Length: 112
Image 1 (cartoon, rainbow, N blue to C red):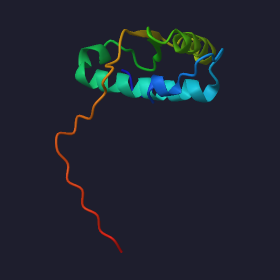
Image 2 (image 1 turned 90 degrees about the horizontal axis):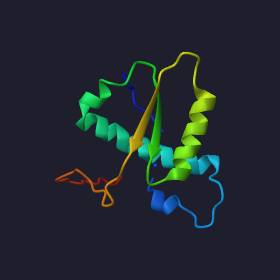
Image 3 (image 1 turned 60 degrees about the horizontal axis):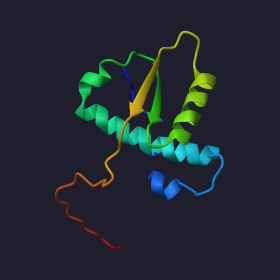
Image 4 (image 1 turned 180 degrees about the vertical axis):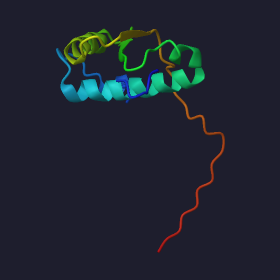
C-alpha cells in the first residue's frame, strides 16, 4: 500500500520561460506540490490506494508538464530497487483554481 511522499508549489510560479532544463530544486519543488495533491486525491479515492502495492515506486507523470514527467521517469530508473514494483500515475489535470477546504477559522493572538 502507498505510504505517501511521492514526488509541485504551483507549476505556474516555478516555470521559467526559455529554461532548457530544470534544476534539482525545481524538480523537487514541483514534485513536492504534485505529491501533496496526489496524496489528497488518494484520501478522496481510497480504491486507487488499494491498487498500489507495498513498497512500490510511485512515478507521477503530469500530462500538462512533460518536462517534469520526463525527469520523473529518469529519476525512477535511477532510484528503483531490484524487484521493486513501479506504479506510473498519469496526472491528467489539476484544478486551476486551488482553494482552501477550511470553511471557517478563528484566529487568536496573545502577545507577551
